Length: 232
Length: 276
Image (cartoon, rainbow over all chains, first blue to last red; front, side, top):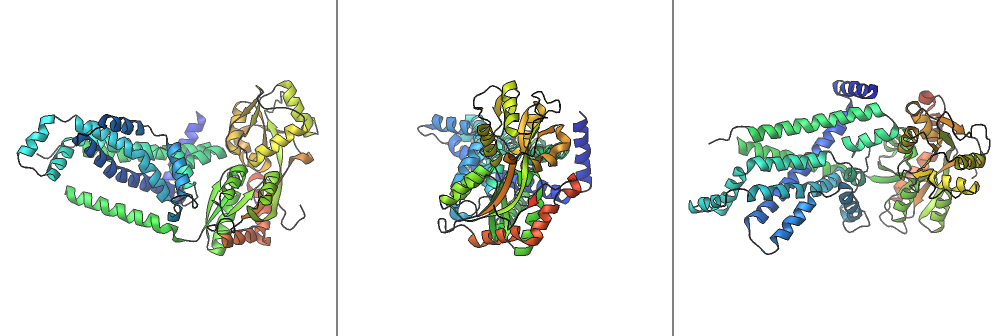
């Protein structure tokens, strides 16, 4: 228990003294995970719309695959992205292994199925007649999609939160493709692993608390967007 | 309002992506090394000096010596700083490295619970200590990760003529030195550690050194330049610069001084230019 108290004190000290290294790590975590979530947002909701609004053979299979992807283990993603990005690997010419960009890519792969899966469910759950109604009022396809997205806004924002929660907290892929390089690709989760292995438990607890605080702040903003009154 | 928000989010996203991408334009050097050089904090001192002097940007990947050499064998690292001599010699014979030079040494220590249930404290020979751990069936935590320390530990079991694999008292963590020490401390087990990592973590562990000083416990670190003739993408120039840096007189002095202030004793002893 004493250790946790020490950790809390250390977290407050690091936060209030604006420790430059911790600040850098925190900002990078935020930057990487927000970017990854934004990428997955477009890909995930796009895929969700395609799947939910179209009828095609094998649709159930595709949905099962997406739903399985929601539980994609980060280390598996990390391993495959590493092998692809090795400089002698198939995508080696990009030279982005052990960079924050590589972390964004791995995290986007982790978050996209999460957002797509929840989007499919959210869109399928809309009343089927709503589509016909919108179309009969003369909406273009684009307007239809926009209106449906607005209608499913609550669960779609939940999808974004789930995606963000999945990537800000993952460590397996970040450490493999980012390399935990000091001042460059070290994020809160990988720094926590490292400090734990060094036996600096107070710093590790402090970093964990900062991570929780960060996740809470982002989710608070998203929840505000989700819960505020809809303009009529 | 909402549209403006969307647009500003998109713009910030693009700007950050741009800044993330541009950061890689520097001259990169991938250093694959053992966990002990990172967990002790030695690299935090040396790498910034090297970057300042040469303008390279070092990507330090701290894994076990085994994995570091595997990266070298795939041409995925430019320079290695490792401590697994037998595997290193094989690495050189197979032509994956161009030069291999002695950098520094310290030693391994056998650590365990201060109560010493196996009663090895009074023994001089490490072989005898290992035999006693086995005979008493006291829990021993192995790295089990092909690291330099793991390789050394396997050699020590062989010297003691003990078949440790599969024994109930012999467990493998598959983790780095720091984490393995944490686990051994928690389970009141014995383990083999490099002195540097042990000293750096001593205060949180509550373990004791129970066997040390035996000649078989020597721990030497070499720097290896990966063979660019085999892998054209290897940064041979950077690797050469790093090897020259780590063997330079001033760097060797900082290695020798590292840890004295914080731990009361040096963690590594510089060896550049000495015979093997």
